[in-house]
Length: 162
Image: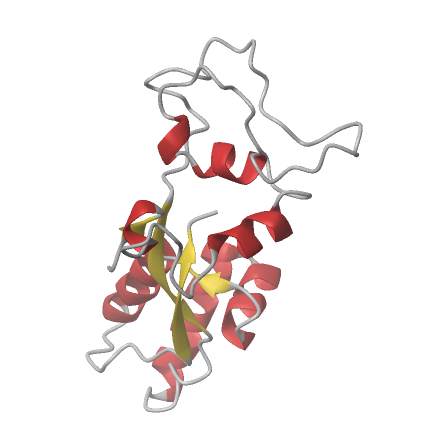
């Protein structure tokens, strides 16, 4: 799993490299649970706080974390999301190409049982990225049903664990 932080993406002159997080953060701010707690010791590494910095001043309300909750805003904040990018896979259509029919059927049924129909088909078509945790699920299910071949995805890209 490849990981890098916001600071890692800065170049020598302290500007961001070609993968601009500002664009992704601006796009996400309207529908992501954000944080505005300035006193939080984890804020500089927290994806929720960083996305919140791109909030426009015009809307009267945002979907934000409750700063009065005692589990929020400290060293062990339950809503903390590490600001790091990981390699996510995309699509499962190539996974089944070499797989025997019975194994394919069992793998598909088990993944649908784990994720539900909607999520499974979003993942399969590539509409939803496959997180490292989900990649482990796919590998575990395939190996459980006896598939010894490679786990093949349709593609991959680097993204945040929203």
